[in-house]
Image 1 (cartoon, rainbow, N blue to C red):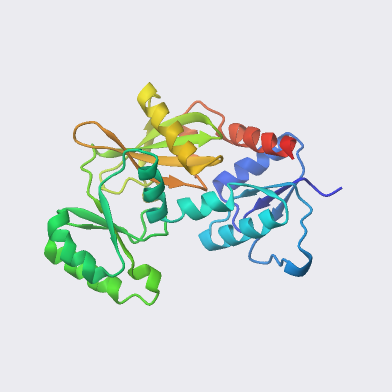
Image 2 (cartoon, rainbow, N blue to C red):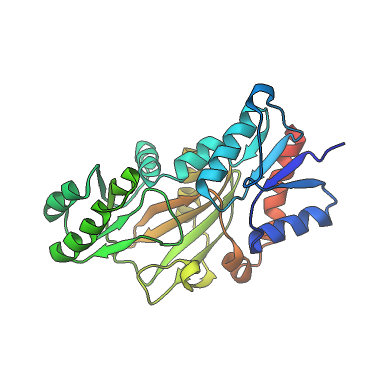
Amino acid sequence: MPPGLAVIASRIAYEEKRILDELDRRRIPYHVLDPRSAVFRLDDLTAPWSTAVAREVSHHRNLTTARVLEHAGVTVVNSAAAIALCGDKLLTTLTLRAAGLPVPRCMVTPTPAAALDALDGFGYPAVVKPLTGSWGRQVARLADHDAAEAVLELRAALPDPQQRITYIQEYVDKPGRDIRGLVFGTEVVGAVYRTSTSWRTNTARDARTLPCPLTAELEGLLTATAAAIGPGVYGIDLLEDAEGRLLVNEVNHTPQFRGASEALDVDLPGRYVDYLVQQLVRN
């Protein structure tokens, strides 16, 4: 019998290795599906798995593979809809705002030139982000009109029309840290502070990770954010503003948890696999 679980991944990094090790420890059979070499016959679309976990590093390969597998009747964690939503900062913001959740002020324009004209009224400093991306790449802080003009001229010259769509967020003067919360299913399994001397507090940029207490306010906001996106496994990034309010910044659909594993007394790979087993049992 083929394994009931597929692990979609072309790169086995820390998180994928820990997940696979936990599956091995529990003697749960699985197949690692590398989307770079996957071929799906759409005229005879079948798949030998009931469940798949999407851990592919490429957003577009992750999304494409999830969509095809779902059409073949496979339950994918996270779903193609969740991957598409979280992978687009504009869609994420619109969804969170529709759910009444606190997010930073932001605006989007189809062209960088329109953004430059609007920024004087929007206010400086501001942050420009690509619609799709992670680890703080292609994110720039715009201190004033001159800085914005230089950055947005470069964006206008990018070859991909999607890259010229300009998403701008207010700069939140956070206290040298942000918060990453982990939600598996409907359960908040932990939260950490990510601290850095840089304004970008990504662990991929060597931010330090420290435990963050799970207050009722924090746990409620994390739970509500995951509910707005839909069932799945998420890393949710929150900002604290100068008044101490929590704002939802981004939602990661393929969460990394190495730093959180080192900071928290929680078996994160075990909890991750617990959620996968629940999906396997249902299928």
